Image 1 (cartoon, rainbow, N blue to C red):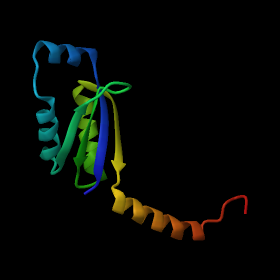
Image 2 (cartoon, rainbow, N blue to C red):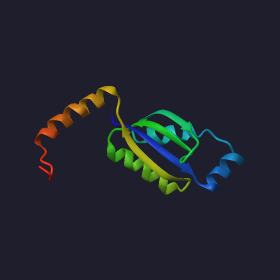
Image 3 (tube, rainbow, N blue to C red):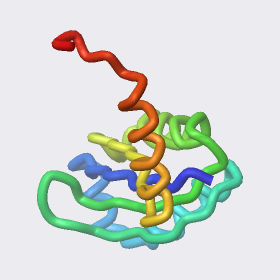
Length: 110
């Protein structure tokens, strides 16, 4: 399963609603991810460009895109950015495959 990190920012309206009526947004994220066959590893609030992020495992890239589309369509969050993340073993496989590809690639400067 691909592992994704998804950054999000709350709209002013949704931030106000969370202040006035606090709720467990991690549970909401977990329910969303599980609704399409994924699992949620982590959910954090952060400071900076985004308000939070979650790390999820999803069946495939289409599922990840569908989750982002659903959240965006609901209108409570904006600035959604999802990126596939890789562990040490996956990074080693990436480098190995890149070495093979590099041998086959002919740059325009060659």
